Length: 353
View 1 (tube, rainbow, N blue to C red):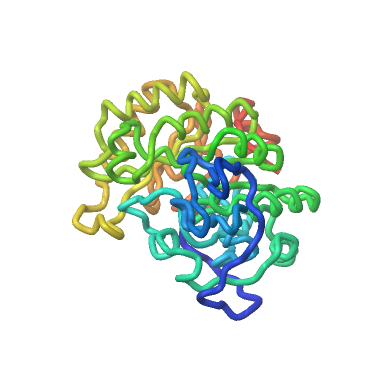
View 2 (view 1 turned 90 degrees about the horizontal axis):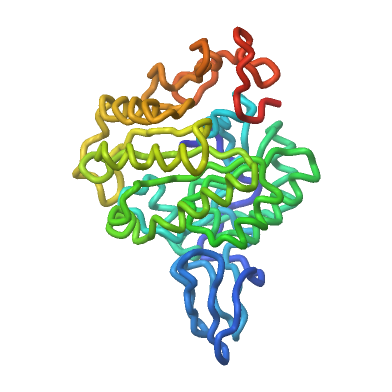
C-alpha cells in the first residue's frame, strides 16, 4: 500500500516497545509457553520471542510488544486495501506496526514487516485514540494492514470493538496465517477482510514466504462461513507463481469453497526486497489469469497495480454495464444503486453504504 497522508500526533520514537498481556497462549511446562495465535504455535522459552518478533515470554506470561505502538496511521482510499466492494471512494484510516509472521522475499513493505519493534520508530496511540483520530479525519472505515495484523491482534481487537461502537466500518488485510479460534473472535467485530492468497502451490509458501498454504485456505473458509465480506489478492510474480494450471486450480477452489461472487484481484509484482532480479509482471500474464478465473465462473475479477487498465473497474456480470469506474485505486464514478445494477437489477455483493 502507498500512503496518501500519514498522521503523527506525537514525535516518533525508535527503540521503544509497547507492553500488554497477550491473548491466545498457554503454559506448557514451567515457564515455557505456547502461542496459539497463528499456525506456527511457537514454543517460547522465558525471555524469548516467537517467530513474529513481537510476542515475548516475560516470566511465564506472554506479552505483546506492539500494543499501543503503531508504526504509522495513514489515510488512503479504501480501494487501496484493496477493497473494491465496500463504500467505494471513501477515506480509510490504516493502522500498522512493526514485523510479521511471514518472511516473504518479495515484500514491498519489508523495512516495516521485517523489523523488530525496537528497530523502527513508532507512535503512542491507544485503541480509543486511534478510533478518535479516524473520526476526526472524516474516515468511514478503519483497517489493519501494511504489515500482518495478526501479530498485533490485541491492539486490533480493541480497536475494532471500539470502532463498531462508534459506527465505523472495520477491516483487516491479512496473510491468512491466523489460527481459527482468534479469527472467529475477531470476525465478530469485522465488516470485511482482504486475504492474500499468495499461490496455490505449497512449495511457493515454503520457499518464498517460510509459511504454509493450508492454514490460509482454512482461514478463507472460516471467513466465508462467518458471512463477512471477503476479497482475495493474488500477487503474480514471474516464474514463481504464474503457472496457469495453478491459477486454474486456485480459481476452481475459490468457486467451490468461497463462491463465484468472491472478488479476486490479480495484481502486478514490482521488484522489491530480495526479488529485485525479477521483472515486473507482464500485463498479459495478469489478463491471462483474469480470463482463466472468469472461465471457471468467477464474476468479479480485477487487475491491480496497472494504472488505467479496464479491469480496475467493476462490471455487472449479467448485463456488462460498467458499475464502478476506477483508475488504479481511485474511484471515478459509482453507478451501483441500493446494492444493485441500475440497468438489470442484478444484486452486486458488498457493503455499499
